[in-house]
Image (cartoon, rainbow, N blue to C red; front, side, top):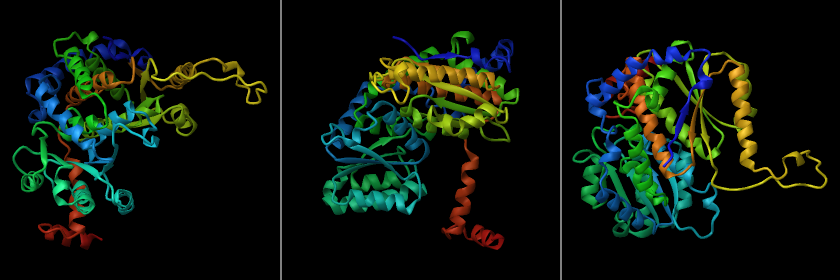
Length: 446
């Protein structure tokens, strides 16, 4: 079986291979801290051996529950951050982009809620679900996170109205804490099927927990292949794997060398629009993990060739503080050639008979050459195909490199203290009980 691969050749110039290799000792130390549980945030390392610890019985249970939810026309995944981004990334990458246009579908339409507080978004979703038999997967450790809690309250009420309270409980699955929290209490009272988010796995690392696996299975994607890919990457990136052969170690070293050389922004680029939400998930993973203590590479993402007609100018000629990591898919799933045209008014007959992917690959190569010539170092990650197995590899690779890179940077990659700042202000402004002092202070400031 092939594997995803990493090529740093086009990242060299601003930094040398010797400078990258000079970080081997620090990277090895970071990996040893991960595997030994001796670094900061070590109580959130449950993701490290998660792929290889998932049992057949757990997969059987997830698939059986997914089969029941697939009797619904629509399934709403309610969650925020890592509680939905990983799912959306996998579903958008692997399933047909236009499946929602099919009149007859094998699987329900999967939609998302609880990742914003937009009244228009939720009211429009509620309107479309009026009278529909839909399912809900509510993902929250506490059950009190504002965005998903509001969405769940609204949609649960609608579901009961649509099909009755007794039938509704069989269409709701709660993925939450094992023993405590408002959602755990509610699930016990109402009789919802439940799955557990392990205490030692943070949201942005949770795609291979039930939080990601259940909705991915509902969408008709093989979670066994996804997990198998992650298991194989877990083995390939063990701490004892030599530095030059360990792509997670090499990626962590290269990006830290570039950061030390003044490259403060990493742009994750793809030439495959189905990978857009992989970029969104990756931005949370690296931004929330590394952006603290006044440090951290800023993660951005682009969809090429689309964004070459907008952000391309800045990337080519703007401030030289960026480097790119390009996701490339070796073999497309479809097959389409450029047709010939007798009039050739658009001047495209020179492409007639060529596969679309060949044209796209030349755009990819041409862009890489132009950006490197323009002073933008390029790292390239290649997936043999865009399927569940290689996506599982990719997700685990990024997670392992992220934890390692954070330790090289000297921060705790597994906390997110800055996320709480807006919440405190919001609760104070809304006069939430218990925030009386903060409410008074913030209103005086305003």
